[in-house]
Image 1 (cartoon, rainbow, N blue to C red):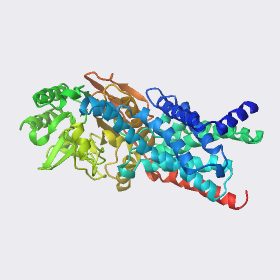
Image 2: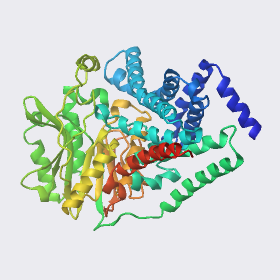
Image 3: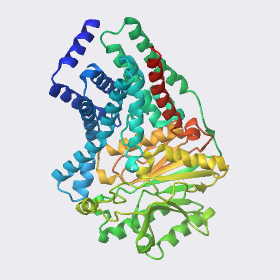
Image 4: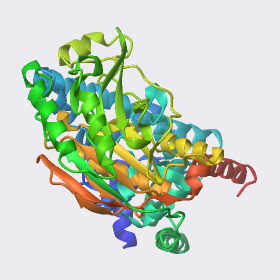
Length: 526
């Protein structure tokens, strides 16, 4: 085995640049299979281990910032391009953009996002040179820490786009049990650490003792996750809710056509009023028009049904507050909100879909997306009371930002008032057709359940319409792209996880501590 490892390392060191770059492109592209609907998280571990070995193979003086940034950037570029290729569907099929231009737009976006990975490589090389760090110090401390920090930056800089970051691949791996403690970025740190330990076993000129220690580290990391899985951070609260989640399956080609508006209004009115339930939820923008353009009696009739049946109805639509101000919202009707409807406004808006970044109005005109500039709301909004539970909504893209969801729960927990016990996501992923966007989005919702210890229900236009219990298991799910209603029971949960208490602070603290320990140890001559 040692001979095979040495041969592989020699090949990586002496390999021509174009061959090495091609290898990294292939390894990066394969990462799409680490996420749902495939779920082979081990592919990500192998790919990251390969990237770390490539970046570490030459001596620091033989490396250049340009080379390591290119290598890491290519790996990330392929990872992102395969993972979010479904954007081409939205831009070409539904946005009206010529498909070559849509592909070009995807490439420009993924090249930009790959700069985070390039920054990871550059900062790692800088620290390696500046403090004369050993290869093992770089591999086991610097690489995992800096990888996690750059992914964290991707989650908030320029409003954030943390789609398919490393931690999300591990909702069903042994690392999943760490999510209630450190969140998805903590899992990114642990995933990079797992890859670093694997890479250590493959490095040439590493002692047998070091290899065995690395293997032991892998075992400890995975077995500790299995043990942590037995910890229950939250407990059942009150009675179960009977829910009806509506999946209209309205074709995106037809949804915003004026002549089809009455069809959508009739469809969702009939689905809502077909039967009572504790909670009835429609998808995001189930009504494809602004509240000011609805028939005058439409919302009063929904409210009348809620009052007469004792149901709670959450209805997705655009709410117009002024001539040039409208929000992507949920309106809630129930006996508890008889005098005034509950309202939740989306606060974390999707660039290009819901607001137009400065200088990009030309891009939105090419896509022909109606209502391209919503107004955002504040982060802290009240959950909706449903019998003895409090349901906290989020809309579509917001489910990617676990720290914001945790912050809202913490704020209510500190106030000891209206603490959310159930999470609700409403989405419309019909923009992306029958693509991997739907199972990916479902996987990210499962991460929110792991982080908060609360069940999540999701009502979507084409999928995934699901009930996820507090252990992040999908208990019920409708088939994709079928018109149907999901009926089931949901048990609310109380209590707080460490992630709710500390957010990303624990993961960030560990990452910074790893860097500090490597630097201090080197300065002391260890």
